[in-house]
Image 1 (cartoon, helix red, strand yellow):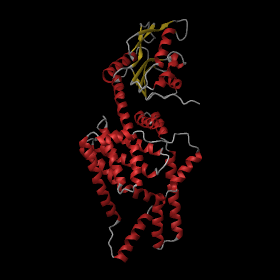
Image 2 (cartoon, helix red, strand yellow; image 1 turned 30 degrees about the vertical axis):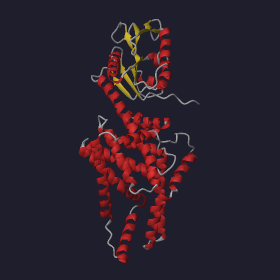
Image 3 (cartoon, rainbow, N blue to C red; image 1 turned 90 degrees about the horizontal axis):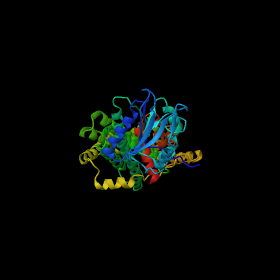
Image 4 (cartoon, rainbow, N blue to C red; image 1 turned 90 degrees about the vertical axis):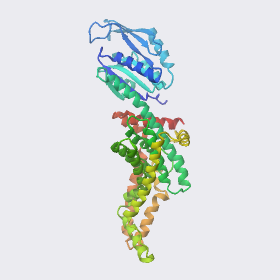
Length: 475
């Protein structure tokens, strides 16, 4: 079965009854967009007069926005229902226009969808060709009461519904167009961060470079800072690491649990700092410092989740042994972790402060971003059998890096006199929690995230995820 044609990146419905101002609003949007972003494709319906204010016009002509040409479209005929006849020559002309539409047009405007389209007639036959052209933004004028029927026919929900008679309707459309560019930027940087995590991160891991976690987390902080300078709401940078972590979930190989947890947590810390302290030098530096501190503590935090208080007991046992046999005074665990986190925080804060002062990535980093955008080779959703998914999860569970902390803690506890039964119970806890975490990771599918976000009205983050996935699959 052939794959369905790709949908528009952002689909907006301008709704209202006849005479509510839908056509005027679309014309104003096209004029505004043309002066700022270039050519707008599509058409508006020019009404030829109305017998009653809330009734359709006696005739409609379609005005092609790209050329200004007007074509006859509908003539009112009360002997049929709905009471309109189409101009067949114009319909043929529109079919040729739809099939010749350039790929990824910035904006396509269509006026209007109503009773005919709800029945699959009128403009609806154009939809497959329009969908295949994959416009970046598509705005449809939809007659009030037919929104759900139109969504069913096009097999897609509207990302936004804007009432034509709302006082700020044009402003809402303009903000949506501006936000589209911002969320695309987030998807670009998120995809690049995912590619860097897989390529640079893998290289650092294979070379066993010390403090590689700090290097990657600091680089992520810098990328979020550079991204924020292009956003009207800089706190949106929190989605950059979530996109990166989503791509990591689709990685066909390598450890996924710890990197995904680290990436998401670091993004949440940075985003919270910017949200609370503001987009300023203090907020950005604080966000970078929190990222650095988390890079220092994330391993301990994850192992504590897996091993619980036995991890602390093992450390205390080692400290007591050093003091008794070697006469060495090791620092307490809180002091040790505090100093370690502080050093990392200073580095992370310094890197983001440098990025704040630079405002744009240096040349070498721009080249790295361009090279790594789309580097991810994801496992396509639906191509793995359930057995293959479980095998992938068990392979993560079998990595020696996963088991090493458990083995060390077990040896320490046994040497300190703990029973084999207690260590066996600890191992069972470790395996059970680890299996749950790895299973949850294996179930994560960014394409599903995007769909769920979109259905809940969060079209911006959904667009960022979709854009990053599109780049990955294309490249």
